[in-house]
Image (cartoon, rainbow, N blue to C red; front, side):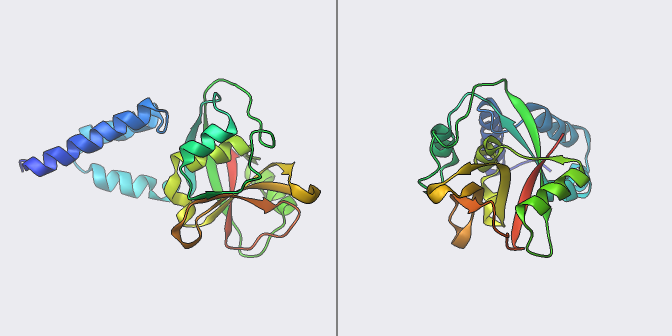
Length: 199
């Protein structure tokens, strides 16, 4: 069936946007090319993509950490509705490094876990502890995920006000995207998901 003019325009718009995202580093080239190759080669591409990747897409995500931006610039690129004012370049220093692709995997619990419990469970699952840089880039490259659930990054905690240890939390309360801080030494509500790194 031949495409209509408006359908062609939409396809062109989506393709252009995808090229811009990969150019800017917000999408990983190899993953995009693999998906496009399936679309090109397989007439039943929709069925293949949905059936084979839906489960993985629900809790495993790729991010591209460029290693060239400081925290305040990553916060700006995240385009949040609000940001905790204790998240500063001084508290969250980022040092230049080579670009790296990271796989973030969500873990959920049916009870209220402690941070130590989650980190121990990460080890049993073969997951590594995330960095706060992972949290910044995840917020940029997967903006809508935090509207679905609160996402905790149990990186090495930083010292917040009053000396308590804090970690990044991507918040989506009431549909507003926020970059917040949670208490590392408190129990977490079972409604949170925890981001580990799969190597």
